Length: 258
Ligand code: SF4
Image (cartoon, rainbow, N blue to C red; front, side, top):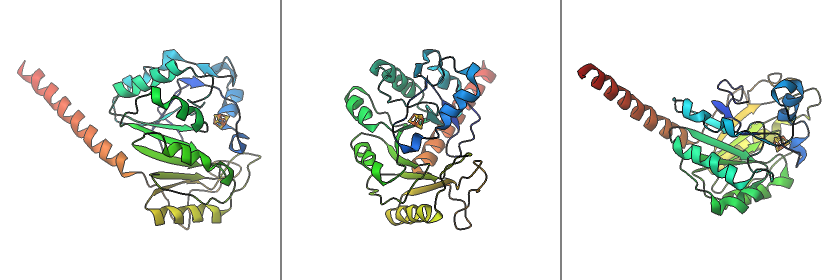
């Protein structure tokens, strides 16, 4: 299941060349992807078991508008059961579609690190790790060792206060958990991360406070929406929309003069 209409505020589209996963840390407890597989069993014939979908690999080639694409909202690309050659196939598509930005988020940076020497890190890849509480900040150190044009952190669901080393980190997303059994986020935790980002000159994105539904607590932090993106996105978008406009104009001119 991929989607060109995602409800995730920090991306434009989701692309799921794999689905299914298993839990690795407290942030996984109320995994949204697992809940979706249970809610729509007809769409997931293997339930939440890790499943490869080679037939979906070429989907981004059909999306012509430069977009931010979240890779594997329903899984983890660096899950131990995803073969290296499949990860390489995903990276090949990324290389073939330089007009998109690919946001790859993992809770398994050790696997990413292990396979990194066998992958080509194109400019349009953004790599991120999830950090839900202070016990998982070691994921950031691993992320720093992998080449990426943009490195980001997803602190969602935020389960505790964080003291972050933001060296070589470009973007931080923060969000509270939602759902019937959500674990409430303290506003001070989010404020403190925002302050750390501002001090370090890192873009800060506040996704939601959380609550019984994702919209319950709203998106305001100190009366303001925080939708900051790394400057790399606007630069990328400007370059590619301009280049595509030129190509389309050239095509139209050729058609008119033919
Ligand atoms: S790593 Fe992500 S997809 Fe996998 S179980 Fe945890 S939250 Fe769900």
